[in-house]
Image (tube, helix red, strand yellow):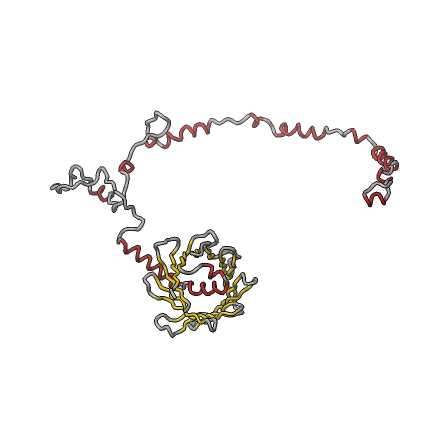
Length: 360
């Protein structure tokens, strides 16, 4: 039977190959960008287990994954790596990963949603760490960081295999195991990329300008070396200036490098401010400070300022309502209270109110 191929690209780049997964009924072989087998997984349908074997020694088992109706148990055979358990919850729409066994601390949760799976790390207050977005065309799985619209971390392209195969919890756990990356593998890929960038063109950054460069007007022109080195030849810049112009191939605009004397101040003013002494600059402001006159309100005494308000407080008069006795104020209300008459609704019988129909 022909193997199915899953090609993994780093980030959103189609040309930057990261890993290749060769998927077959007997297992999965994980190859790096140099077609070297880095991981080897074998399926055992009879016992519903999957094992990770050493690529150098295929008979040596590194990890065993046991699947059952409740999830998956990981058994590790290397020192320092605690086992992990994955249990189905919420009717199989969520997977909870625990570190150290069935009763270990919750590490991550995987929630199945309409178009993918959201991975949440425990302790992030419910914020999504990454998502697995399933392509509707059954051709691609995008792994994004931080949420459904986050940056693309990895892109997996499927050949001769539908993406929908891994939409079920048990199959997704299998996919999760053989696509996960250790920290050592991630660091190795970063080091390889750095070496590739540095080795492409030593001494030049990958982001350097590669277009046509323009020489300066006063750039050094080829010619014979003068006998008197104290006097530069025409067309050559002085030694100090040539050292300053050693831009190591960086493009520059000649007009922007020349110092110009732009006049400042109002239009028509050509006087430079550098020739004005500091004493003359601030003399006018100091003279104005000495000639400040106190305002007219300073000549009004405080007693006169607040006298009018105090006198108005003393001359307040009582209102007209103060002369009306209390008995006269509330007498009308008591009389009106005694003369209350029953309303028109009291003439309607109870049966007519209850039925809502007028009685004949």
